[in-house]
Length: 457
Image 1 (spheres, helix red, strand yellow):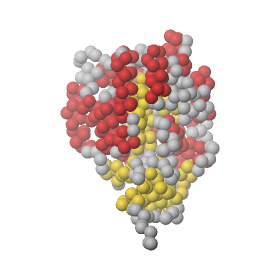
Image 2 (image 1 turned 60 degrees about the vertical axis):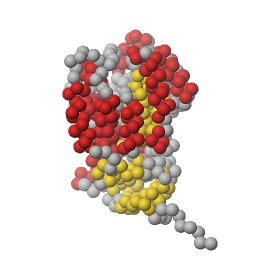
Image 3 (image 1 turned 30 degrees about the vertical axis):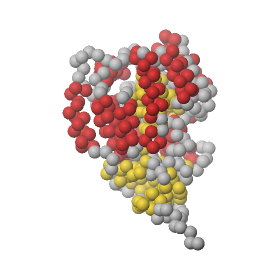
C-alpha cells in the first residue's frame, strides 16, 4: 500500500540567517548565527530549523534571502493603552507626572479609550517585531479582546490599588481566571497589584495567597526608583522588595514579575536570590533617562544571582514609544556606562536578555525565546540590507547597535503572519487614529480636579 503524502506545512521560511541558541552556559556562547537556514512551521509550532533540512510542501512560503530570522521580541512590562497619552506629560519629575497629568487623565478612561489605545499599541508593537507583551492596566477585558482579534500574544493583568477596596483585588482575580488560556492559548494572566506604595500589606498578603490557590503569577511595580526605596526605609524600615517578601509575595513558590527595580539595593539581593529564579525584573531604560532617575536596573547583579531580566518599554506616556529594539540598545549602553566596563553588556548578552530571558520573565521560557523545534512559532524577519546595517561583520552587533525596529519586515505569531513586508494584516491604523483623535478632547480634560490615585513616595 502506498503511504499517503504528509500534509503540507503551514509555513516554510527559506534562505534566512537564523539566530539560534546553542545552550551554552555563558550568554556570549549561547547565541550563534546560521546562514542559508530554513524554518518549517506546523500547527503554530516550529517543526524544524536549520541548514539542509527537508522542506515539505507548505500553505505559505516566504523567501527570506537578505533577512535574519530571530525570536519575536517580548515587551515585558507596558501599559499599552497609554499610547493615547504619548507626549502629553513631558519634562516633569515623577511626582508631578503622576499627580498633575497622568492620574487625572486616567480618571476619564472609558473602555472605548482603552480599546483604541490597545489597538494602536498592538499595531506599533507588531511593526516593531514584538510578538508578546506583558500589560498591567485597567479595563483589561477590552485589551484581551484586542489581543484575540489582532493575533499578538500577551500576558495580561488587571491593575488595582488598595484605595479601590476589596473589589479591586477581586476584579483582578476574576479577570485572570476568566482570560487565562484565552485567544487560543495566546493569553496568559497574572494578578496585578499596582505597587507596594499603593497596595497595603493586607492586600499584598491576600494577593500572594490567591496566586498560590489559583496557580497564578503576580505582576507588580516595585522599587521603581531609589526615592521609593529610601521612602520605604524611612517609613517602614524595609525596602519595597523586603515588603514584598514580608507579605508573602516573594517566597520562592510564586512567579513574580517586578517592573523596573532601579531602586533595588544590595540588601535586596539575598531576598531575590532566595526566590530561586521565580522572580524576574523588567527593565525599561528610556523612561529612567527621561525622569532623570539616578540609578538603573542592576542587571549584572541580578544576573549573577539567577534573576532573569527582561526588556520592556513601560507605557508610551513615559517612554514616548513601545520600541523594544531601542530598549535593547539602551540596556547595553547604559549598563556599560553604569558598570564602567565596555565588556558588559555585550551585544550577545543584550540579545539573550531580549529573547530567552524575556521569555522567562513572562513565564514562557519553555515555549518562547528561541527558534527551536517544539517552540511556538513567534518569529520576526529583519532586513539587514540597508546602508545603516552594512557591512555585517558581526550579526549580534548589527542587530543591537545598527538595526532599527523599522528594519523588521515580517512578524509571525503562532505561525500566523501578522505583518508581511511592513504591511499590517490584522489592524487598520488610519481608522484607529481617526477614531482616537475624536475622543482625545474628553480624555485629556483635567478641569474636573480628580485623579485615580495619589503618588506620595
